[in-house]
Length: 195
Image (cartoon, rainbow, N blue to C red; front, side, top):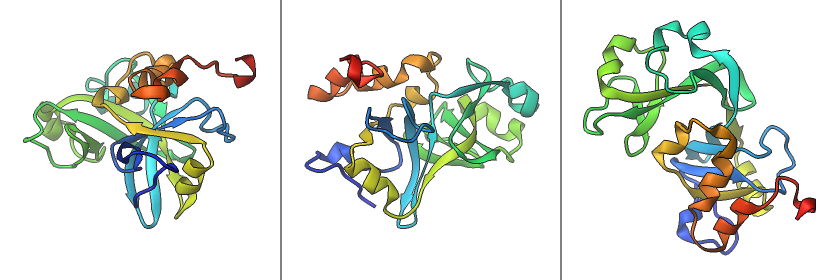
C-alpha cells in the first residue's frame, strides 16, 4: 500500500521502517506529539508502535527474563492504544546476516522479536531490545486519510530512533534531521497558537 502525502516525494511513502510524526493538526490525544514506527502495511491497513511514550513500569516487573537485554530506560513503552494487554518487542541485531529464530526484519538490523522465543536462543544475536505494551493500528484507508488531512509527517526511520534514551525530544530530533523546510518544524512550539 503506497500511502503518500499530496505532492510528496518518494521518501514519504508509508511502508515498514518509516516514521509517522504527529503534526500539530493531530486531533487524537493518543497520538499527540508522538513518533510512530510503521511495522507492517498491506491492503488490510497498517500497524506500528509509538516510540516516545515510556511507562513507569519496569520491564523486569513484567518480563523478568528479558531484563538484561533491554536498554535504558528499562521500562515498558506504551506502543499504542490497541491491544494494551499484549506486548511486542523490537530488537537490533548485532549482525544482519545472523537473524535468530523469532525475528522479522523491519529495517536493516532492526526488527520485531517474538517474546515467546527463549531468551537464550536469541541473546547472542541481539544488540538491544525494547518492549512495547499495545500497538497503533489503522484499518483500510484510515492512515491514508489521516496523512492526506495533515495529521502526520511521513519520514524515514533510523534504527536509533527506537532506542532513544531521551524520548521527550524524539519528535524534534527526527524533524531536525529532515531535508528542506520540514526541518524547520523541529522548532515549532507544541501549541501552534504560541507561534
